[in-house]
Image 1 (tube, chains in turn green, brown):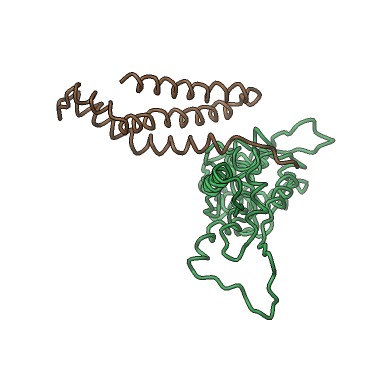
Image 2: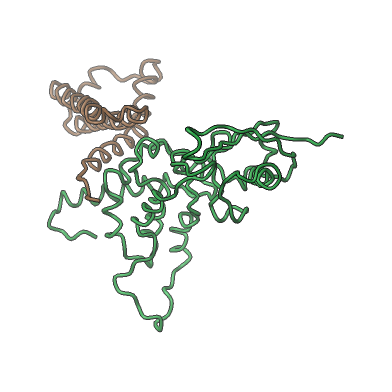
Length: 249
Length: 115
């Protein structure tokens, strides 16, 4: 009996050598429990060791194996070959990002944006460790928990047409994380994040496409975070118009 | 990076208010004035409707009902054009879209004034 196979059409690109990205086809064994990442590992181990791509945990936690699978941003560790029968499967680097080599994209822009929204708990005055933990009720945890599930895989940036057209756009994950910390009862950093969010290229750049929430592998709803941040920003703006003398929250 | 002043919150608030009106109030009027009255499910005479529309509070309501969804349309349509790739024309598109809504607002005021 001949072994069942599947074809992967993989984008190859070596800046300096190739003038532009090209597609290379690989035939891999088909296994019902294999994901696209398993197929890529098979190619690297058995067929062509020069194929470059990022991966680490292979269980949907590290967020490093995001690629375009048949044109849709996916974690390749969660994209089963069986869902793409009979193939071929097109595997490309994440859209909207510069390519370093093959399927590896440059993270610098996202990392810089992530840093700008200060995604950590900010306190006006840190209390000493001897005073104990910052306690939180289950309801206070639920307020932000969904948004804390983000694994920085950047699938939402690859799905966002606005980011594709305007690279300065702060983008879904960074806004969702800013919102996550703004919602955290232990956090006091709203005023520090607000200037970044309320920029023209902050939340206001979003045109309600909503694909970010569709492709998120962790069930985060960045689109909701963006729209709710717009409401908070608009409320701030309105208050500053009506009561310019009042202190802002 | 310097923070750029933006008028977006203003337009977004009108967009949001218009969306509420379009989603909650417009269907009621479509049902009553678009179906129930023309199909004879209920009868409200033209004279009564006109008298009702002449009341200052009703005028205010009609103004919100008609004008706010225009801004909802303007904001959405502006974004659709931008998403289609016309980002080089952002300023003219914004002026055209919001300008049309402002014109509609003025026209609404004028019509209500005549009643």
